[in-house]
Amino acid sequence: MIAGHYAAALLPAAHRTKAPFWLFLLASQIPEFFWLFLAVVGVEPTLPANILDATFDSISVDLRFSHNLIPAVFQAVLTGAIVAAFLRSLPATLWCAALVVIHVLCDYLVGFSHQIMWYASPEIGLNSYKTMPYAAIGMELAFAWICLAYFQLKRRDLDFTPRNWTLLYALFTVGILLWMPAARIPMRQWLGL
Image (cartoon, rainbow, N blue to C red):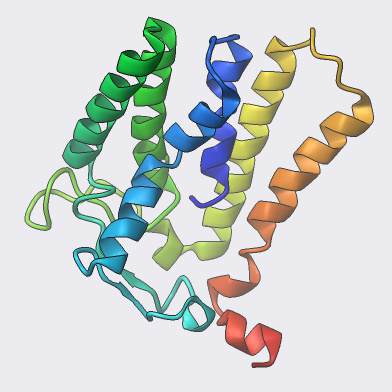
């Protein structure tokens, strides 16, 4: 998943968890930020190096520390500890830790290959970006819509007009579907570069 992870941040917001919404957005992307850092320092290399040349078919990612299950649990515990130290809120702590794990679990369905621990450990991810990239993007969109619908159902007290809700759904829909062309054809070709 790419943009769909942000939709998971709506879950604690739906339950009126007292914490800034940006914190839930950040927690929902911790494995991604960790991966980008590890890719830059060469620990989890990603090829091709230029995103304009990448497709879901051609990309090769090494996610052993950022996206495998056991390392993600450690990230969740660390995230929870930091949130607890600053906010001293058990619900916010648990939600932020859960969002890290939710990120990785979603990637097992919609994303690249993942294992429980290291490369020698069993693979539990579907590797759907490689095997069925268009369906993977559709699953990501469905996940985002489910999170949005749940948020909308639980937060009827918000002063959102139908136009606001439509814009929110459109934002996620466009943000996710923008990846559709790059599933099989590099962005460089789409942009004529």
